Image (cartoon, rainbow, N blue to C red; front, side):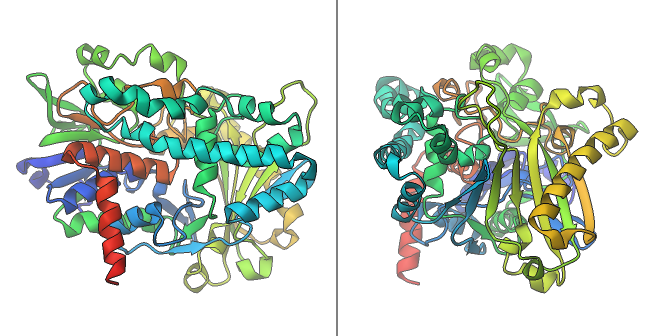
Length: 528
């Protein structure tokens, strides 16, 4: 991997150049590299990986976006096969066990456990009078998640095929996607406590039930039907292992290489122009920097209208931003009793007349406890992440200021969040008091600075019903030579972004790489 720009990048003509090194870009680049393409991945940040990267302070290390991943518990699950393929089987996973999520709602505790039948039994034990509603809910979750396969396949087929048969491919999914989660659940039950419990994981897609499409809810719930897992060695192992695959097949990744714009020739994207003015030529350009950034920063104004996205982006807004407290504790996970599961904490009902509008007040994750390799590498240390909602507008007066140079008022606002979150931690785990070795708050401005999302959004475009009606959100763009990947093309999350990379590589290669990978990995497992 190159550390930064070098002349050899411009001296080479690449088959494909990727803008951004998130998991969508890395997945597509790894697949193409394994198929013999000469690929280059460019990252503006000094650390690759997008929301899969980690950062360190003193003796501590935290992930920034990978708190758990579903579908990787068993070698035959496709998510696991895909990760094995793009990582060269270098990526190992540690199951979080039961529970993997724990909700605390109005003082009541509800656990989320692996296995469909085990989970159903547990939910019914919490709400025995709602058994029929719970079983019908689970049926709809399965139906919606299954229908998503054809819906997203439509995004990979040529436009003429989509125009002729895409309606039939999309229809079963849109039957659910066109409705909010709350509308679907309210049709089954009027028990608000049950609805809130079933929507515990809404923070994984960043919208309350009365705004989120039931489709994203169903896909997230289905994704974790067999529980959650964490990468052994930390979240950074995801991008590190995929980068190794790219390099093994003569690909390249360069950091500190910001892209200024597209290199256009005769109306076609023929490469990119770096912020320093250097030109890099490529047969294909793939943007993994999000559709808003792509349109605003890369696509020439006279080409933008081809997308037909200007009006759409007025209705499909950026997803939520957040505040996060990164905590390092000078005591081991074992002594503290830190769990492998995540907490979803909800405040008591306020009686404010907004049923279905609840989001968690805090999400608490213990990355060091999830990683079985942590204790050996960091003896006597533990880490915590405590996440709450944060709005960019609350930090508007500091827009345009420099990181770590925003002044005492900004620091005071962060300190207020830190104090509140630490008090919550002390109450839950008293042994942490007076043993904090590091505490640091990130705000929406931090996200905007490092990830270059202008609103500090963490899930790309918000997952409303309107989002899933946007047919232009697909790998192939109206500009020849320019393609898209990343969480805006499929859905949020590590697996969603990875699937987008598989779709993009399928379009570029002209074959169904999801099917190819499944066949190759199944055959590989059969021979050991």
